Image 1 (cartoon, one colour):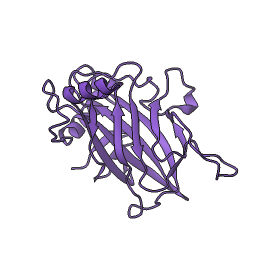
Image 2 (image 1 turned 180 degrees about the vertical axis):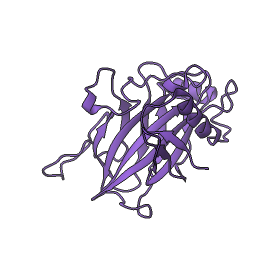
Image 3 (image 1 turned 90 degrees about the vertical axis):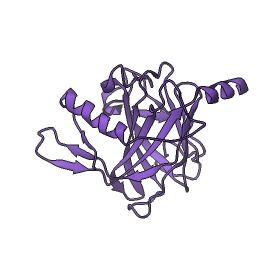
Length: 231
């Protein structure tokens, strides 16, 4: 079953239905990452490649808080991963990395981030409009699924370079980490899924991502306590 989402602001009922379908497909079985208060809850992170570039791709990354009761409060979520090869981030819209890393080998245009393991945070409310994408710029704060599905979503866009330029040559990021805002989350490996579909604002045309993958992060009280003790 393909997932169909609204690419522009549309009916609230349709948007919530879209999120429900994604939630229904998002499950992870793990003894370590288990929350007895919300055993089926998770945070699903979806990467949609929207276009290929000369040396990589442009992707929209969307985070869905499918936890029933656990909100993400200030200072908000922090997302990390490790690139599989020598990828860099040319630019970002709706978020930023916390460190640029060593970009000394580049001349002319300097990448936004050259780190092998970038850490990404949401931008703050009031960010200039030309630096925003839909569902960004909430300071990393998200409602829970039960509270308000429409406010349980966060997105950003990034342009990746030194990467594959086709479905066959792209390598998926690895070792995803999530703090929301503290520890306690375990993220599974990224898995390729059917490309997300989008309905145009006039509802007369359906487009789709060139490639889509998901990673699912789940919360554990026991893991949170163990990691907090180490801090």
